[in-house]
Image (cartoon, rainbow, N blue to C red; front, side, top):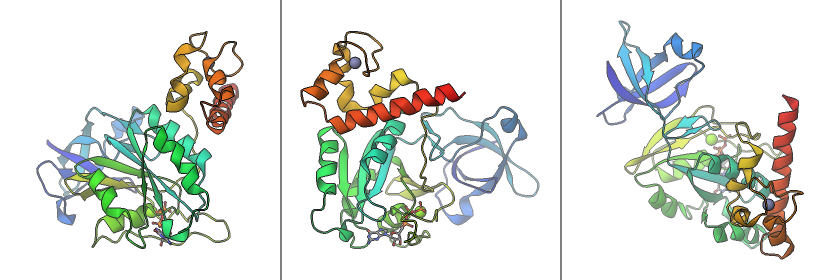
Amino acid sequence: MAKGLIVKALSGYYYVLPDGEQPSKDAFVQCRARGIFKKQKVSPLVGDQVDYSLTENGEGIIDAIGDRMSELIRPPISNVELAVLVFSVQEPAFNVQLLDKFLVHIEKERLTTIIVLTKTDLLPEDTGWRKEIEPYREMGYEVYLTSSKQHLGVEEVRERLTGAVSVFAGQSGVGKSSLVNALLPGLSLATDEISQRLGRGKHTTRHVELIPLSGGWVADTPGFSQLDFTGLEAEDLSECFRDLHVYAPACRFRGCLHHKEPDCAVRTAVEEGKLASWRYEHYLQFLTEIKERKRRY
Ligand SMILES: Nc1nc2c(ncn2[C@@H]2O[C@H](COP(=O)(O)OP(=O)(O)OP(=O)(O)O)[C@@H](O)[C@H]2O)c(=O)[nH]1
Ligand SMILES: [Mg+2]
Ligand SMILES: [Zn+2]
């Protein structure tokens, strides 16, 4: 039995880099997963450390999956330490509500998050997004402004990713693959224009893939438009809003949902202008979504 790392999943195959080998096209072993995984309802993920054995036809079979340090459902990947949330300032337009949703998703997994804004060349002068992103810096998120087209901010992102295992996540068409290409001259991941009619990307990237980058790995992933709150309980939502959560310990009730409960310190903070009301509104919208999901099942 041999050990390795799943670096790519595509059409039922897993591409495993054997431990101790340098990544190159010939180094990867094309593997299938044992049927037992399906029965147990687990599927191997890119990022998994696995045990595999070679079959007669030269293919591999994944026999066992190592313990996961972290696991994301969207994009499907395990064992990353850093999530890079990618948003374009335009095409598609920057959307703070979606950013808050992504942040909940990532905070829930307790991953470190950085925010990368792309396509700054499309809006050279200040048109709102600069003001919209500022509060996130104040919340403690690192924010990077980039243009892959003009190679702006790319070196700063590279420096941050050095030595880490990170995943790019974001809507289709925001420029994830373009940024990975800019980080790695010589690489040519497929990219495509967004649909002008729909104002969004065409889901150009179809699979998750770990790509070696300065002593670490970076995963390019397919863009997604929908995110739900599967696996998140209403009581756990406020922890995913850093700025809001600092007020929670002062609420009268433990388990306060910061909605209609009396003596809620979060609501007071909003009334006193200490907490941004738009953040609180997003919190309430997501809370409603979680409650409605419960009602449906
Ligand atoms: N002007 C400008 N266009 C960019 C920039 N980065 C990417 N684009 C364009 O945006 C479009 C989408 O880029 P992709 O890299 O394919 O986007 P993606 O996020 O990988 O999309 P999916 O794979 O569908 O999730 C392409 O036409 C790129 O050329 C940039 O910095 N400036
Ligand atoms: Mg892509
Ligand atoms: Zn409260």
